[in-house]
Length: 421
Image 1 (cartoon, rainbow, N blue to C red):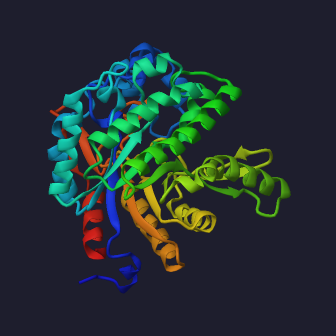
Image 2: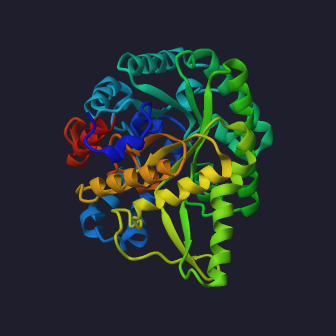
């Protein structure tokens, strides 16, 4: 029996789950990102003070942030080996779905040479989810690519899309028999921006023209993947995981602030989705940020509250994005990532609770939301930040045999799901 009549707004078949990404949890990956980590770990450690000392928790993290080992994914959290143990955690958290990535560099470590053992692993992986009654949401690309593909120029060249096509085709033949939901690309706007505009991620280029080439080629990659997948299995439900921000004018009555905000909304939120709108069965998106803009596209957020990463936290900002998404596309919506870096677990329950309220409001106004995936199930490797940010519902102690411990906020969330479902 449901504890609160107000919670009846969620559909009976609503997917409650968590997300992960292969490179961030598996361990032992050899791709363009792991190669970059080994090359730049020392530099990232040496520049940590310059980059991160503004954070309110700098004194707590500085020892780890100034250690080169922090920036090497290495053995990860051994999810590749311990996935069944982690699926037991999904059961304990009352989750009925799980978003995960397959690692292209494992499946095709050399051009045209497929790794049958890796395919067998992911088949077992999917089968174990099904055995537990957990719906698998398979994510094809989450920023990492094989070294050989990167050496060819990666997504910089339209001609290289044939290699991604071939990879997608191989997935349809090997892994999708027992999969219904597929996410093609994760946050193409973030990847293109940080890799080709700001130069913070591999291949560390600062070239606006190259940025637009990559961004445009990723729209092509999605559309081509959609066609390949649908031809092979028409029943597949296919989307992507865009990164969308709730952008607002700092001064609501300022014309300049309003124009800046509208431009940023279009460029960041809608440009990519508009170009693939006919090639998605659902709209998936990741929400972390509410940003306030003033003047000429200058971000001006409140100072508090902020997460361990210094990101301003406004979880209820999910609500206006849901309304705008539904208005734009009128397709089922999945919140494919949503979470907070919170080592001490002081904000996570509040974040999730406000997020649920935001979804309740949107659903009550007719928005078709089908699922919610918290980021992340487990503490994991956070790209250029390394190991110190803690997003997990489950804490992972990498110093003591990767011990998993469910955080108090996750226990509360599990009870919430039980009462809603």
